[in-house]
Amino acid sequence: EVELLAAQRSGLDPYFSFEEYYGSMPKTMFTLFQMLTLEGWLSLIIRPSTFPERFQGPIVVTTAYFFVGFTTYGIISLMRGNFVNRAVETAQDLGSARLKARNEDRADAEAVLKQIFIRADANGDGKLTYDEFLREVLSER
View: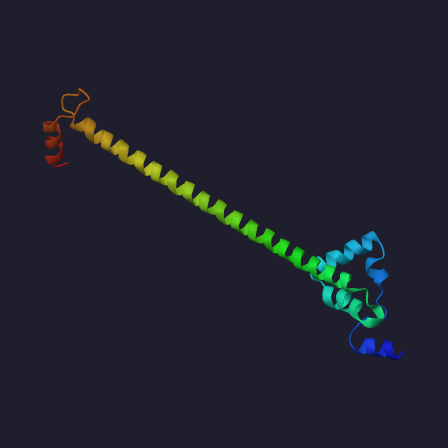
């Protein structure tokens, strides 16, 4: 009864049972999911198993800490990878949009220059002589 009162004062579930959290495969999977999401994993699962009257051994506690550490690191790595992947895709989309706009501007400039050279070619032979070029440059159009 004294242990029960001490457990209640410490905020610990006095009826913690290892079987309740790890007694079957579904219970273990749910417990690991709780630990993965960091939902009460320390206060509800790990801390109760470290008290002397319920101590499950250092292997359980160490394994739980490694599980939480590695899965949290893995989830953060996945989120970081997703963020970087989207940033790269956005940069590529912006780059291709700029390249497309630059190519369109270049095509427009080429069309304007072609019209100028066609207009400057006085004899229509498809070749622009120096005199034809000077006449076009010096004309006030």
